[in-house]
Every structure is written in structure tokens, then in C-alpha cells.
Image (cartoon, rainbow, N blue to C red; front, top):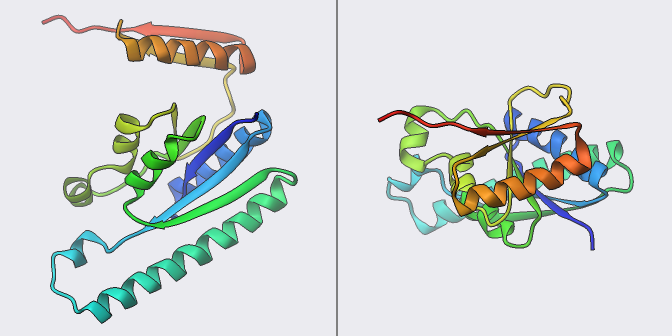
Length: 190
């Protein structure tokens, strides 16, 4: 059985970079890749009062925009990665919720290091932070700019059960991909 990688895609530059990394990684692993994109009424609109028709129109517009974005990017990914098992899931729910839900059947979730403004983070929270805290599988956060791979996996440990899981995963990744595994333990003096 081969791996399933999940990537969050919203059309932003950070999600495009995450998708590029995810497609390369899925190809390397001979895994399937699922692009997850979601839409929901923006927080700034949900505070107002809208008629049912206005709400339905807005959700339909967002659904159409989301589908158009995902269809276009899937064509690009399929062109660059011929033979990659690729599908998509477009849902009407908050992005973090959708990605956490998908993580239950995935081997890896990939998200971009988003650049939400402070107001958005306060109102909505960070999608990346929510996925990191609630995912049921390992999560890769792809930085804004891709760099050449270093041939090294770095894992942080703190003695917890989650830390032990992270070390096991890092060892598997290290065996598969790299020349060096660096285990880091840090602490603060009280």
C-alpha cells in the first residue's frame, strides 16, 4: 500500500510553494497526493447580517472560485509530474478543520508557512498552528522559499511520548532520504 500525502491549497503563494514541495515529495515516495481546498464565509462577513440569498450567492461564488483554482493547479501538477496519483477535495468548511479531518487517513500533511495578518490570526487562528496541534499524522510546514535539500533531518525531543513518535518518524525519513539525522534537545533554566 502506498502513502497518501495531503496538501492544503488556497491559491496563496505559500500554499503554491507547499504544493510544489508536496508534488515533488509524493513523486519521490511513489505516493498519491490529495489537494485539499476549502471555502467558508469570511469572518468579516459572518459578523454582519446577510439574507439567505446573499449567503448562498457568496458561498456559490467561493465554491466556483475554489474549483477553478484547484482545477488549474491540478493541470500544472499533472503536467510536471506525469503518473502521479492525484486527486482533490473541495469542501465548505474552515481550512484547518478540513486538513485535520483529512489527516486521519494520510501519511503526511503539508502546509505552507502562511502569512496571515495579526487581525486574521486573532479572529481565526493560524491554519498552520491548528494543523500542527491537531493533525493525526506528521505535518510538514514548507517555508515561503524552497531551498535545496540539505541531506539532513532535524528532530526536536523533549522526553514526551509525542517526542518519541517524532524521533521514530525522523529515523524512518532519515533512512529513506538523507545522510544525517540531527536530534536536538533544548531547555530553559527557570
